[in-house]
Length: 369
Image 1 (cartoon, rainbow, N blue to C red):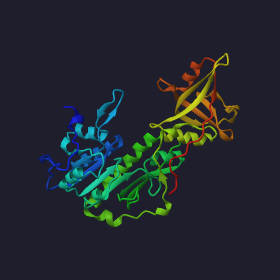
Image 2: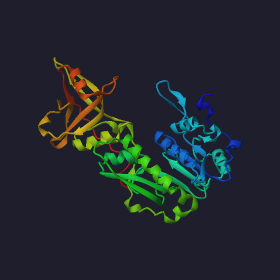
Image 3: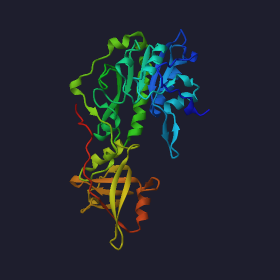
Image 4: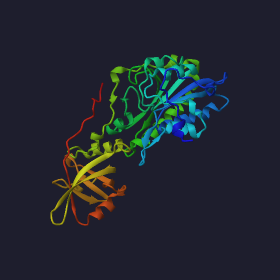
């Protein structure tokens, strides 16, 4: 049977939980909420931990985003979390996919499970008070930042965009205010100058999962609530959602700023630059170039005037503000695969490149609350 069709949708108020939802009287029920691939790794660790004799919980249900159309064929596909759960043999009738976490039918089914604890990891849906009131031991979230820094939808991307030298992951209780709940545990990590958002996200959720598994006993016996520390709201910063319009690179900024943006926006939405291709007969064509991998140039003599793009040390060198240079190591021309800068440069066959100036696009919200 198609796995998408196996996912249970909650459309009516008389939804019921089937007999397969009954949980063992010896095991404390935990409900997991998550959607993307990084969430699936957290779920996998919970499955593995629940099978060990020294853990007294089980995953009673999974809540995830509804199926969406993905891939070239735009087929309706379950979320990575739902697919992972199905692959591990988890009952399809216990995978909940409400459009909103406040739907009455969904909340009715959740209450019937009587979960002691709920755990969220990149679920992607706002949890209303009616939801938060259900689990007696609370709802806990893995958030990939050192709260109260970078509250919001894009903490990893905004941290990299800011060029931070260290970041981390927080395990915190969920309250109605955005990522503002008491903190149970944190882990700090140094940030490499060349790591990109997808890799850093994986690393932070891996460390966050370790924190969660370590703290599960204290979460179930109530000790976590007693030791959790309130956040200092005066130190809070916001990590607003990224928009596709922000993907354009503006070369009146310094190379280090642009390098950080390329790292931050890797994966989605990516970063782009408009360049002018000048032919041997001075004919011109404007090309939208996806910028994949960069570094900051350490050779100022490679930076030219008049917005000319040069080639040195295997990289396209884009002149930036304050005589800095951005070395682009990988690009993706329209309709083609990602390629080394050298291959792209050789394909020009003597044609010249210049930058098309772009206006800066600021985030949709201020970075500080």
